[in-house]
Length: 238
Image (cartoon, rainbow, N blue to C red; front, top):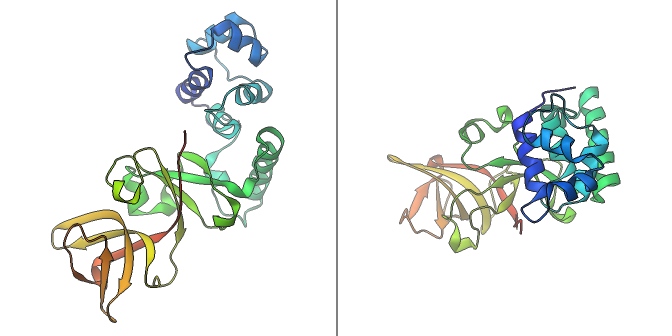
């Protein structure tokens, strides 16, 4: 058993229940009694529901996924799911996660991508030390072994047709982007510190242009541009 986050689990179960279902109906779908569910929702239940109950929660809603429930309940540890794939324990947990996804959610595990929050400062400072907060599903053809998602928390990217609550699929950039590449980038120019999405155009060995140039940067030194990764896809949770 890993860390049981009672508040997070209760919030997920409430989200899964929704406003339309009664406690009695949802308890029946979960295979538990109404008093048990009431106690659970009121945080009077000391231990988390067993995985079979969480499986039924996941099967009877389209808002909350089994993996999220298992992590919140302490049956899976997110830091191992997202850890070093050469570690035996990591491989074991990843295998378990893949089996859950295939069995319960009928989803290709390769499509499931760990997601970080745009407002999480540690993501921008050092993603390696940042723990993912969520998961999102993207088409397999766009996903690489190193892909991850970033959940957008504002409407600053409307000109990209990306709005608050959307997820963007990021692929780490190991080399300089080609002309016209869409990138997630930090721009440090003078006193400006801008986290944004741009298209990248090479001017010469030391200068680039980033579009759309709504900030009127013009040509900018490469040294003022920190490329986080390529933006490969956008997903929206309806």
